[in-house]
Image (tube, rainbow, N blue to C red):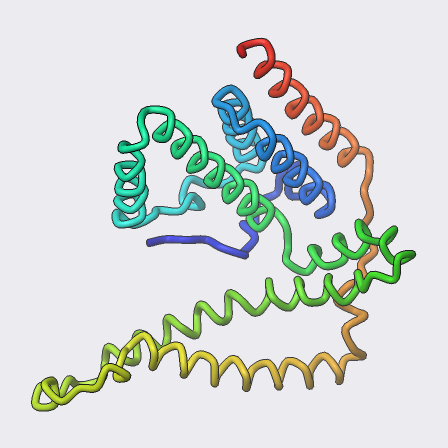
Length: 249
């Protein structure tokens, strides 16, 4: 399985140069439209739009994830379970599946075209009006920033621990006396939690030494003319997909 997650693909394109908040608003608009109108015309329009965004972003084909066979097998098995509910249930399941894949692709599009350091400042700027309600916008943005930066490290740590466990010699003499608690997954998760706790402490000390969490949400970037044009395009696509759904229904 090849997944390029939470990493920017270093390509110079108009999509990469957009403000991070513009991409977040675009994905939010697509999510709202799909939430209320998950019909096939809307799904087709959003899929076509995302393909166009990927072409405009000049993303190489190697960026696309190659999911394992068991992922598609699970989807087919879940679809087979809906056969008992009739054709309507199968169609609804297919719509929900495509809806989820579109949202994942839109979210990955942000990660592939945006440095992770720009996400937290954009969220802090978008949530600025909520500060009047005494909502901790900056703290939430810091949590998102640390999560996005720490999750790839956590995944890499789990891969290293899994590879290290595979290199351990197997003792076949104690197979019969093995306890249920002696689970490889449980060992990896326990070791990962221990390593994550240690790294969290080190990260906290590093952030404190550099002046606190305020630097994570401070960024001079702001939307420009290209962002206005991009938002207008997203609004036109969303409005067009709704109009297409009403025309075909």
